[in-house]
Length: 514
Image (cartoon, rainbow, N blue to C red; front, side, top):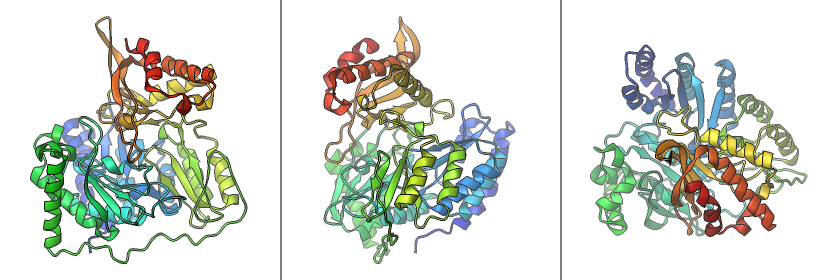
């Protein structure tokens, strides 16, 4: 009905080859190439000597087959660097054209589409990573997120798209994929329906989404996605790139209520058109596998399916060692129903394991995983790779972790923090309890490398809050600030969340912000 054959995208490949060859030959400037290559999910990295490729993993779901493709590509084309992104994709980095071309094309044979992965297109559709296996979830939203991802590809070539269109599905108020403040978000309810939020987003002028509908039948979601596009075509500022995001429509329409009215008018148009976008008969991803034995541990999560477990794996900075990623693919290749899920905080979850399988995955991933909540902090790829990056977010995280380890700060004394290399908020700095984003710090009137500090963000549904911007810290002072705060928490005899009060953090931060 609305599905696009992945093979059809192969017709687009010659144009990408031609432009990429021209860029690397010096015949096309980086601005023109960036505007073109985003359509294909690829960008030149900083310096213009290498490229990245973004592999869409719809709803964060990485089946054994898709992971095997990634593993095979890493080995066959000697890929040295990978990243789990906050939009639940896998990015491959430091690539030359001879690597990008075959990986991009062969990915289509594995059902992985890179098209629309960057630029003014629908981005990877996001989903609560443990949907379908998580105890206590309202219902499994994964099938709907995957159908939405298929439908969104129809808009890759649509006219007048927002600079980004991010769609998310959450299975509970944990709100891991930030459904309540995306361009379009579907938040599950206890009654098996969705509340729908629209025109939200992080970055410059961050806004929470407007609740445009309540108790929506899951079978109706595609109507809302098309209405989102039509709403932007009518009210979006697609001529000013700085304001070509859906959240600016709230102001254009006179505020949240005006926006809601405008959206619902477009929804009515879609439904009156007679186009059948219903998802009647959609089946859940039923897990019939059974397990025996018991297992527990810090990185082990008991699933709602009795006898099955999930193993949590968080490579520091979301940067897995590519060799280990390949080993994981080999390990789970013959494990029934096992797959990997990428989370919006760059964690990978390996799901549907029995106790014996989970033990093997624990041992393997234990070679390269965060040991504490703080070490599991979120960081975008950073300015050493990203063209628009301002600061090295990965470098800052590494420096902070090293300082904390050397100081012997207890694991429960620091929270997970969020770091973005620039205002774009790829590291979601605005919704962490503590966040940093790349900027400058003036010392004696001179600009120095720095990060702006945010405090008090929250992404849980019903408790959403944007962190308050408190000022800039010099980059080389941030590790000491983190250590000093951790030591203060440890001295109190409490863990961080028990100790936390904004005023306490502000008091410690004051001298670093001065």
